[in-house]
Image 1 (spheres, rainbow, N blue to C red):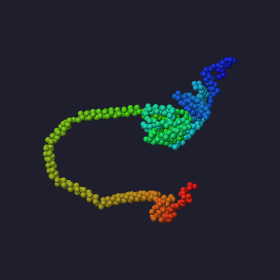
Image 2: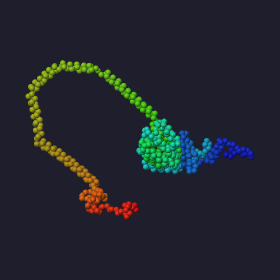
Image 3: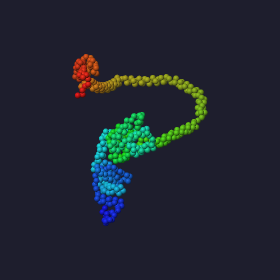
Image 4: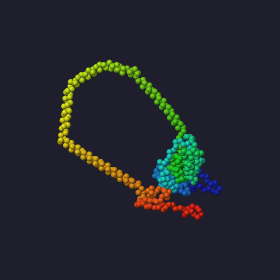
Length: 494
């Protein structure tokens, strides 16, 4: 800034500078002193506008340094900036005159460790995931049209106004608001208590029990949203019997309640859209379905009426249907007498021929029977009979062997089954129980199963695994407790 300062003589006024001149001098001074620097810190809030540039904060326990990564450098980076990641950033310091602040223009970043908050969050996330709190199989479906919706949020923020506005536009429903602190030390406890409080309401009571819950909060840094990363909130969400939508932060913000909830909404307004359908769309759809049904019925009736008319025109008249059969019947009636006379004459001729040929037919039949008897007699010769007997004997031996093998296999199978059943009988029998250290108490051959029966018995017989022992009933009688001198029957714990 020395070049801006001019020597003034006594009595002269101090020189005047414009804001731009001062900002330019500061910019040149900082960029000349810190041309290339390496800064270690934890990445705080990260912003990615549609321009492609990345804006972030580098912070430690005492200060925050604004940073910017231009679009070209961000595309070349291997390690992308994430909130809570401890990094070493390389770049140059400069100023932003538009807001009178200094910042670092980052050229490259490399991990230097995980921030304390993010490390704690990751550890807690893994522990809850191992317990099954994030299991998708247990997530409950959302009701299609809930009667009552419970909202857990701050009553004074813009979030509740956005939710009510979206519900009023889509499908007005009854809304119960449970006011809570959505930031700070009290946030986690109040949110968990609100979720459990809504679940504790009884159906049909003075205050209706919600059919759906929405836990909502606007965007913020990881510190602002930390209450929704607490274990008490995650467990209350997991135990909720009412389906729950998580709408915490913006679309890029993720907290533990998002993993446990039945549905995650990117914004509170999106949660309201998930909760209810659009009423006008339902009415229009219902009206359209009714019109389609009416048109379908009318069209079907018209097609059937037209089809019936077409078929009726194709049907012939009854007189035309009967004229052909009548004519054929008259024709057959005229031919019937001549046919009967011809058939009778044919039968007479056939009968006469059979009567003349009868002796010849009987002779042929007798010769055929004689030939058949001769062939049967040849088969009854001794040698033929012997061969038949031998063949039948072999067949009988084969059948006997097969029968014996089948019988032996059946006996072996039954023996194996009997042995298995006997082993089962032994394993479930009371003798196996006695071998494990138990005993059976009897009196006069009856089994004693309770104290009163044992006190009333005269003689007792106890059976162990290696034998039985007889004892007197007085040996098992309970000892009477002697009252204390002060008359009280109270025992001592010591």
